[in-house]
Image (cartoon, rainbow, N blue to C red; front, side, top):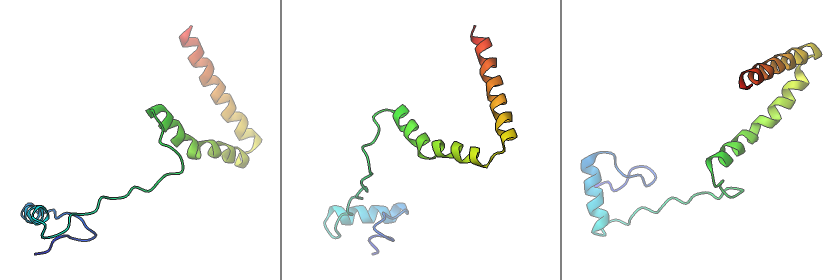
Amino acid sequence: MEAMIGKGKRPRDPNQLAAWTVAVSTGQIPPPEPEVQKPTGSAPPQTISEYMSAIGRKGGQIGGKRRLKTMTKAERSKVAAKAAKARWKNAKRST
């Protein structure tokens, strides 16, 4: 009987899974070792908003600066005018 497939994965076939479960519970084969999570560099965020802001900071803040370096003065002016127009459009709605 093949106990495990691959690197310690449980069998997908229901019959093989049942046989594997019986073999583990009766001690015929050792139980699979729990997966060890790799430690991250910092503590996980407490709220979803903290998590989303951390994800956004990963590449978002660098991207805009690099984008502006590659744009011409006319392109930057065009983007700034579009942004200002969008801001004023939203300001008129709220008042």
